[in-house]
Image (tube, rainbow, N blue to C red; front, side, top):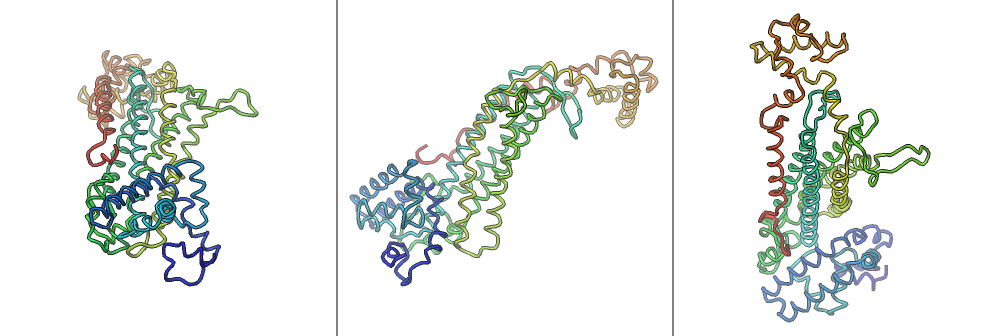
Length: 480
């Protein structure tokens, strides 16, 4: 790099020797932080407003800068524009690029914009704006998946399936109850993400490089314009804080885990061995060798994506570990992990459509729920109502199950005389107590799979999803 080229650097005054060319290319962040163009423009406009309020810019200069910043965003917020940014011959990062682009449009006024600010506060602000926006996108996509699950749960009505512990059949549950288990996970995911958005929603602008701006700027002006709750409280923390990125990535790790669990169950339930789910062809592929195959590529890929999401969180954890206050160049490496999970919201949109397209073999699911002694717990409960201690009731029903296994029948296939060899408490009413409907309805507690409870839970879940999807005042951002 020539001295003339180096003179274009934002920090070149103190240096006399050119940078090693390979090092210069290696350390640039414009190759990935070009994604922050919109955020850099918004933050720059807000800073300009603060400068105008402080008398550094005239009203005319403010208008000219804001117009030029809009022009920069319009020009480069395209596929071709992103390519130009990534390959810019001089710009080190998105901040440098925007400044150079301003100078091209408004001359020395473009250099005036950097008065009273540092790139340290700029990147901290840009990243908060970026993460906040992507949290909103993920929350909306999670809400759509939850609504798809609730729609399918309502459509399932009184359909029944086996539930599983240790991947062994356990007790019958309503299909709607199973689907709403994932809605509960989604609600927690939305809550975590909104908590993250609330915590990060403070504005670093005015923090300077480390000690605060050297001009008496009104920091509330930029904070309000950008939709932040307030300015950050400590300049050293503000310029070196990347907790919000880790918080975001960890919250997304939970999203990935829940997606993966759902994907695993659908993959299993779509096998011939289960036969509960018919995969939609629009989201499946075939085999190049075996003509009969319909493969669950969507669920398999979703199951794998959690590794990438979790890996991003782990990378940021290790990058931040042991960094002294305040800003360090290491923090540049926290950006790419945040960018590489941009696919989460689009993936959730796919899952929502996939969920809405799923078909279930309710007859087969019901049959599976009626075999394998899944009413044994209901049988033990019957004996408890007869005054038998639960441990004793458990043993009596266990003995009855073993006997039925040897005979090759279900519990309701045993005669009353056969049952009474395990206890005199068995009566004719035992058979009514272990029907499929009775087995479901004996779980008549909040959160249980009794039919009435699930109907109430479905109504409640719809209200909770709608409430959490609504933006609260803490994340009602500028321009919303």
